[in-house]
Length: 255
Image 1 (tube, helix red, strand yellow):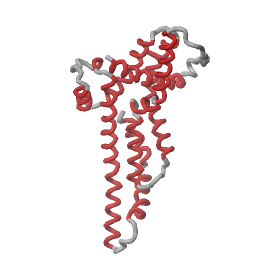
Image 2 (cartoon, one colour; image 1 turned 30 degrees about the vertical axis):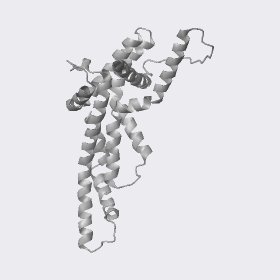
Image 3 (cartoon, rainbow, N blue to C red; image 1 turned 90 degrees about the vertical axis):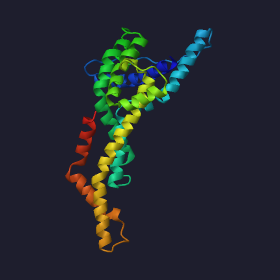
Image 4 (tube, helix red, strand yellow; image 1 turned 135 degrees about the vertical axis):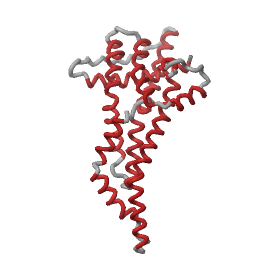
């Protein structure tokens, strides 16, 4: 029971973040007023005041890991790993820099998750802000689009693993799968997919490295680093096939 509540709370944090992002997307069509934020510190006079203070402290603590929750429950993990493999395969060291790769992965994540965020905003965040829906109902409705996205990208084998390890009853349908089980299954599925794509990216560049190394050995140029010679050829190949277009298209279509 506690596990299910914790899972729902983590999904609700992601739902709030995606809801805020979706609100920015639709702001031109449906303006959202900026809320008034105030901080008041007064002595607690009842146990309810103490409980409320502890809840606020816990919420602030969870918000510190909210970026991690957002990144691990969206397409960001797969994208950033594939882009890192691409840079390693090219052998271009720190080009593109980490900031560029992370920024590209982040905005591609926004692009991919836009339909999910918009659906969460329309079905949960907007009614909750307008006091048409309770917090519990908003959390349940807001988690459905995100859970559906994760289910589509999660392998049954990984999901079965965490269901077995959690010692929960075998679920009859997707609604019976706890979010605390779905999230780690989704993460390792994304890691497997990202490493598979990274392996496929490595193959053509590895062939170029082998050809260059064999050519240098046959010419007796053993002191010349093969990587220095193969880098221009790998960059030329990547440019000729319009690599950034192909990689971006493949990543977006994979979702």
